[in-house]
Length: 198
Image 1 (cartoon, rainbow, N blue to C red):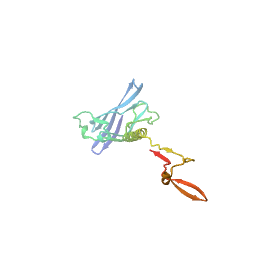
Image 2: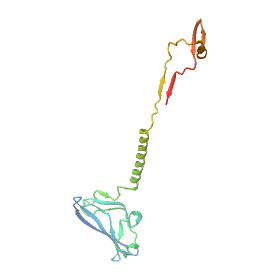
Image 3: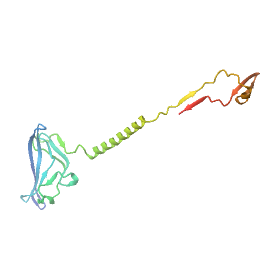
């Protein structure tokens, strides 16, 4: 697949050539196309050549990527073909790149296979936060399970309706007469009615 740009500045007859291949893969039981190589031609000769990596899709699909570049900050899907190749002097970046080499219908791209990795930075951050929340929840459940019982046990003694007759020597400390309308009654002192255990 060749894109002919003609003369651009000092570049005479600039052409960007994509070498596409198609193969049958038994594991996926389907045909798949891949971008094998990218060539830059001007002045009627090949000036730079890049090997493409991880640029592939099913034969009936198209391939889409936000950046296809030779720069490391864009994951460098284009790699110079050799150590002595002058392509090292080039920085090539395609923005919003989409390509389909085969099975094109009515001049439109097929369904796009995107290059976005399953473990993108946003997904990884979400997984890390979920793991932290799960650890906090597990710790809270662990603390609840091993929490000592704080139930309060009350042992209350009801006031008896009948008090036995006591000696006169003890009566002074334990009771005090209450005067009311001619009847004699007593108020108990120093009697614990309830015990609370925690």
